[in-house]
Amino acid sequence: MSLYIDTLLFTSNIVAPIFFIVSLGYLLMRLRIIDQGFIDTSSKLVFTITLPVLVFMSISRMNFQAVFNPQLMGYFVVSTLIIVPFIWLISRYFIKEPADLGVFIQGSFRGNYGIIGLAISFNMFGNSGLALASLLLVCVIPLYNVLSVLALSLPMQQSSGPSIIRPIKEIARNPLIIAVLLALPFSYYGWGLPSVGDKIGTYFANLTLPLALLAIGGSLNLKSLRNTSGQSGWSTLIKLIIMPLILTLGAWLYGFKGQELGILFVLFGCPTAAASFIMAKAMGGNAQLAANIILTTTLGSLITLSSGIYFLRLWNLI
Picture (tube, rainbow, N blue to C red):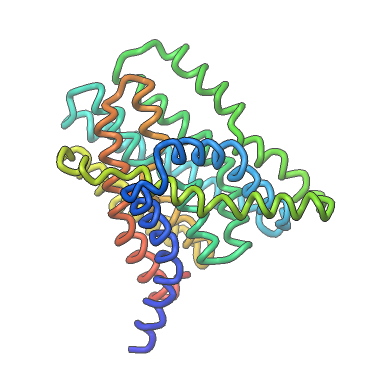
């Protein structure tokens, strides 16, 4: 019995603080202590400054030779490139509206790894887990963006040239990608920032998770649940249960364990990224469906992430 209690406490300590802040953001929004202006400004601040600084600081401080894991990065890329076309192939037989199909596919694979994933990885494994999770962003960000563009544009029968070239340019200017690339030489050669720069960077990095989680909570609109369709339900099922179950099992069979297995589970099991709504709206997809998927996966991940971490810990896999 003590093993079960210890495992439950371990899981609660990881997940509960994150979702407490998300819930606090929702409550503060309902009480009008924060408003949409705060949500927009904080989201932009996190995306352009504090999250890139967090990624830079975590990667630049790590031992590159000790943390760099091409097998881990390769597994993520290969498994994603296998499961996304599979989701596409199956869903196109059931979803006939082009505006719905791309949003459904994107919502089923594109996780909020940059915020929720990094937070949980840090809570699970500390700075080493955060560094390894941050390093994966060099694969996650461009791959998820390119696949999302393809999923949204091809069903709408748009010209693939302009649709792909513009996002590639945006990816090249992405602050997170730039942060990763700037941090890699520091990690590889063992460079360090001056003490003043290190302290300033730490201040900015520490702003990231609470500010981002408050913004996510403030963005939730429970009233939209009334309009949630079966499509968002199936997308949520794929995102939170089917995909992480299959890909985490595959990772275990491949030989991953401990910190690596835990980070892969978090990566595949994160709720759908809020950025998927922005991209869906900009590219003519069903924005309401995208919003519903974000909402249902965010709420559902409280149970699925907690349960997954609980059983991985209980079975001594992490």
